Image 1: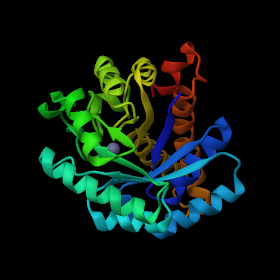
Image 2: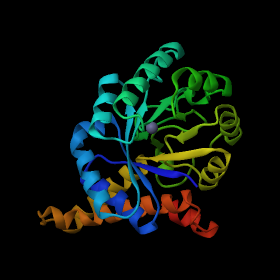
Image 3: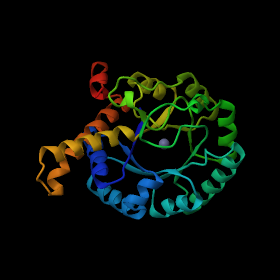
Image 4: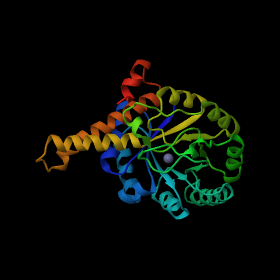
Length: 285
Ligand SMILES: [Zn+2]
């Protein structure tokens, strides 16, 4: 099994993610990137998640996704986040190492139990709909650079580039095409570094590839764009079906329900609760 990580930018998405975890009865990781934290509020998100933990009986972890500066990482650690993705992957390798190491030390000084994740290789930036795939996605993380990076930064979790990418292509939104992963490379990296591995950019990935990736050593899987697509489509449907409605708590519950269904089907798959005949039905929207 792998821990499902789902990004939230507002309370609708957060409610949906937590409701899905409660329904499937598995732990979940709530994630918020710098942009999502700016919109929700870093301390506000931590406080709402803390309130939800008190009410629910499933573990809810909170991750500061894709953090590009020491200051933002420190802020998340102070706010009580359980994990932080330290992302200097756009920098040359040596600078990525130096900034990541410094940031790991800073967040561990605030909370020694915080999980520090580092990233090498190119997996793109935006969890949105892209027109084409950049050629850079062909540059996979090598086991050797993974080992060097892990050894010199003291990270707890590594995010490698193994055929994954952030966002989805138009053809993936309706399930016409799927992302495929380099399972062999995942296995080689796992064998070499022996620490937790996160798969970023999971939206639109083939179900069988997810299962093989988990078997090869992936521990955490990030899904964002699939939630955003469900959020937008269901919001449009809800608004269109009640054109004169202005009451938010009448417009938004169908949106929570639609996003929750996406999260539930992913959680079931990641936790080995989906039968093979359900797989394409659940995700082939
Ligand atoms: Zn990511």
